[in-house]
Length: 260
Ligand SMILES: Nc1ncnc2c1ncn2[C@@H]1O[C@H](COP(=O)(O)OP(=O)(O)OP(=O)(O)O)[C@@H](O)[C@H]1O
Image (cartoon, rainbow, N blue to C red; front, side, top):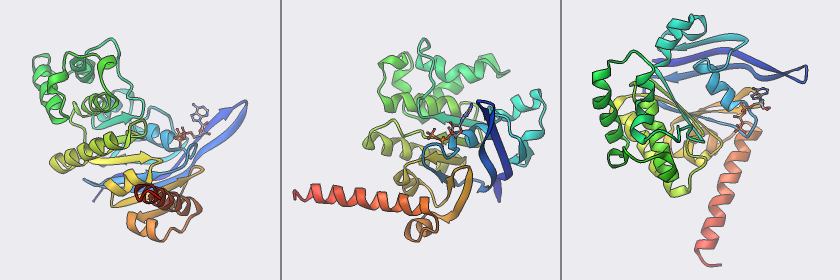
């Protein structure tokens, strides 16, 4: 059953008085409970797509259904309500440096009508889920990149959303920390059944986490299907480039590992 259904989504920006078409009719179907990958080079429109889904960005045409709700038709009040079902994680973490880990995680609850006397319990529960129980009094400045992203993930999850959009969540992290964060997302998905849209330019992150994926190129989804299918038999230039870059990277590692 599909949880996120996007049809003919279009978005343009006006740049120096000229229209710049960034999303040119996106169609996407993400099943409930799956981790779905979207890959694309820089400038393909990935972040714009992510931002359109929770209406941080307006859209020009098309429809976005999230859990059966037509997101683009909601008034302001209903949108605030529905947004709680959509968590978002960013590459640069977007944390408040002057707030402790606890208060960063609590923030979405503080600005909603969540019962005040239940905030602490929810924050502690969420911090535990992401492995941050011992860092609640720390400030972001004193955390590693991986810990910062755990705070970002906790903050995205504290409202118990049904959809998590991960926009390059691991792109600023080293390979080992990337694996830890991807493992955390997989574990959260397995435990809670949350649907995850993983947007990235890293094919290995998608190979590690997803069964299905789409390739975004210049605002168009040019290929979608199983990760194995696209990787082994890419139909598009971008798909082929990603597969080749990945293989070359593997070869380099092997050669170096063999000491040649
Ligand atoms: N607010 C904006 N105003 C004008 N142009 C924008 C705006 N936001 C994005 N763009 C343009 O839209 C295109 C797609 O940008 P977007 O950030 O969605 O791509 P991306 O695939 O996420 O790339 P990256 O991985 O580099 O962030 C780019 O050409 C970008 O310059």
